[in-house]
Image (cartoon, rainbow, N blue to C red; front, side, top):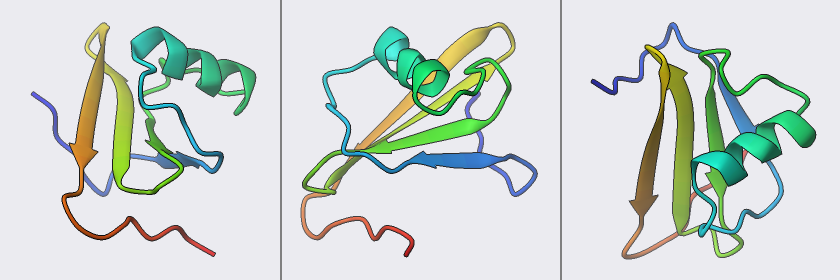
Length: 80
């Protein structure tokens, strides 16, 4: 079960991300670019250049979970 609660830590990767990346590619970004452990239980967020797609990566119960959302209209707002 994939659930997101306020008890989780969220980390946003600020560079535009190629949405063709899957578990291994996104885990590599977490390790090499964010200097974090992708198996930490944190939720890592990745947004594409047009800001109309987002992927969330989380490790839980011995496996990775990947959530992918595409907006039909509008864009995701990034923090300043």
